[in-house]
Image 1 (cartoon, helix red, strand yellow):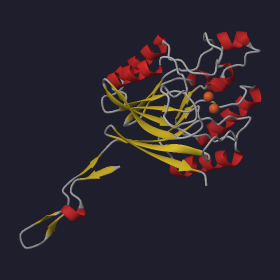
Image 2 (cartoon, rainbow, N blue to C red):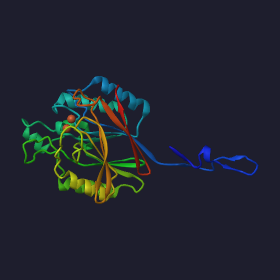
Image 3 (cartoon, rainbow, N blue to C red):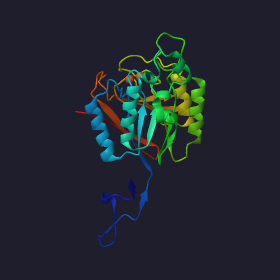
Length: 273
Ligand SMILES: [Fe+2]
Ligand SMILES: [Fe+2]
């Protein structure tokens, strides 16, 4: 995108009444992301997936950020279908796992020791940073193989995961806005479905904001939102994506189109009508 110095309605007028055109156009780095979540292959919505893939093909975002729950039951066929779909998108991907992507509880050894094996060729690309011209996508792990509470689907930010994210934020190029991507919302969103109880989430938000993160992209609750969260170090933006699955809650299938330019973030929810 180009920044035009001097808009037409504010051109200078030279002596004699001749407008003086803009002197300079400066190329500004921008990044345009499609943020999508909760595809839930196994309970996917084919029409929503086709709609999204068509927009990616036609509009060519700089990257697609997927904040987890690729599958419904983390089965081989579900992963095979998810991987085939993602490969067809043919754009850079940022891949964060969701609670539905871990091996189920009847497969405890694989859940504990090789949880991402069924991502197959994408296994080594899970939770990896992605640097674009104007944004650095920083993964933050919130899924857990085991935690001391009944509901294992809830999120947790462990110190090691937060430290890894902080290191990556510190290493991001100075002209890139650090944007964190994870599955679970790190704070309960007022007026949204149900409390998320992400352990360590609020402390993580304070630390991430202090480190310079501009936003946190999440999924899990299947409805889009866009809120500011205040911390002692300043605000940080919380952006949630809807779902492209049949598991709709209060909104239609959707994704977020996010533009980043000079640290400014614009978000537009795009909904399948
Ligand atoms: Fe989900
Ligand atoms: Fe989830």
